[in-house]
Every structure is written in structure tokens, then in C-alpha cells.
Image 1: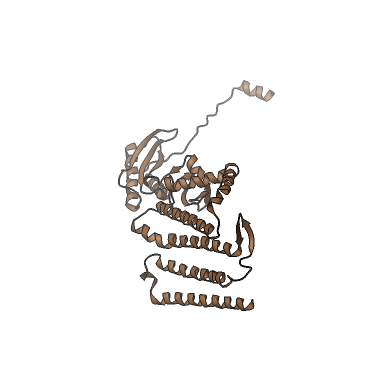
Image 2: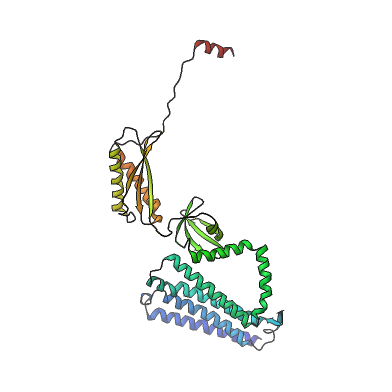
Length: 353
């Protein structure tokens, strides 16, 4: 037994030393910028995990003639499950998971860049590829350990009953996640409004979708919410967004001057910002006569909703400056208090009380 352990340790040391030599050779042979995008990290990740799996395979085959490796742990029908079969199944599943991560993280992005696919579509392809590969890996692992897949129909029936009673919420969110990936009412990178909170779709998981707010907080929403509830998606179809900037000026102000100044503010922002669009052109809407002010709205279009907060803030700064420079007053609500003098008889009655 001690001899077997020493041999195993020696093989592990040799494999790690070979990995070190390969990585050192790659580092000295070429610069990183000489590799296509994603190839070098993929190669390094492949080398690391190849070493780990090589050690696992050595252990499996070296101890393949030992009794404890093939001893019965439990049985499923007529199939006796041993430690060896469990390790083989885990090896197949974990290898498929690792290959999926390597391919989606390093090898597929260059293809996406080549065909100019948007972030949401990239995420959809990655999820579909990952789920498909994992299903195939599970089927292969079950077949490898000797399980008859047709015998799982009873288990599937029991699972269906469990889903119908206790797991319907999880199943609902899982199916909703698949609908989101294919129908794409939202996708990764979209700017959405959830319960009056603005955020960006960061990730769509099997059960829930993660929204990153403007304050860098994460909102974890069940996938079914996006299928059943009304969701405002600023990025759906057309990423352009119209900003509405309200402004009120004092009664007696020159309204034509106000319109000219507001359009001038929009023109200045367009010259300074890459997000303000030339068409549709900015317009000024005379909203009406308020209690304390003449109410206007400046309509201006931007290319992406993610620039809404910054652009609106810049416009407010410019509006405050240009109205002040031109003597246009921005009023505030006022109330008049009228004091009436009381009759002497009323004052006397109050004193008597």
C-alpha cells in the first residue's frame, strides 16, 4: 500500500513538473499579443485541467485491480454501483462542464466579434451550448455506469408529481428562463426598470435573473416575473431614448427667449456629448400655465439609455447657467398670508371665554 502511494505521488510530481515546463516554454516562446484573442488563456486553462484529469485517470486505472475500488456501495435495480463507476460518471460530467467554460469563455468570443453579435445574443448561445453539453454528459455518464435510461421513466413520473406539488415554482422559473433565452424579451446588457428601480441585466440564470442597479446593487428577480409582469425595457428593439427635461420660468418671462435658450442648451450638449443624436431634433414643449410658473419641457434624443442620467444632469447644469446669464427667473412656490383685524366685540367675547 505504501508503495502504491509513493508511485502515485511520484506520477503527480512528474505531471506537475511537465505542466510547469510547458507553461514556461509558452511564456518564453511567444508574446501574448501574438496569439489570437482568447487562445492563450484557453491553452493555459486546458493545460491546468488536463493535469488534474490525468492524475484522476491514473488513480482510476492504477487501482483498477483493487477490490475496494469495485466494491458494491448500493444498487439501482440490477445495477451495482461502485466507487469506480461513481468516479467515472463524475469525471465525464465535470469534464463536460470544464470544456463548456473553456469554449464559451475563450474560443467563442472571437467568433462573436467576427460576426458582430450583441452581448445578449452571445449569452443566449453560451447558455444553450452549456445546457446541451451538460445534458449529453449526464446521458453518457448514466449509460457508462450501466443504467438503462428506459428504467428512469418511473423516476421521471415521480419527479413530475413532485414538480406538480412542491417544485412548481422552481419549474416555472426554469421554463421562464428558457423562454427568456429564446424569445429574448430581455437580454444581458439591457437597461430595464424593475419596481421603479433602474438597472442593467447582468446575468440570466436557470432560476433567476440578476439586475445590477445604478448604485451597483444586485436585484435577484425570478425569471417568471419577466414573463408574467409588465417590465420596462429601454433597450428592446431600439436603444434610442427620448429624455424629457422639465423647467419652469416665472410669469412675465419672454417665452420665445426661453425656447431659444433651451434649444441652445440642447445644441451645446450635442457638441460636447457623443450620445446626443442629430435626429430626431430637440424640441421645446410649452406644457402649460402652472400655479407659480410657465412650464416647459425640453425633448432631446440620446443613442443609449445608459447615458440618460449623465446627459440629464449636464442639461440641468447648462439650463441653470444660461437662464441665470439671461436674467430668466426660475420661480419657487409662494403663498400669501392675509391677516384680518378683529372687531372689538369679538375680542371681548374671546376674553370672556
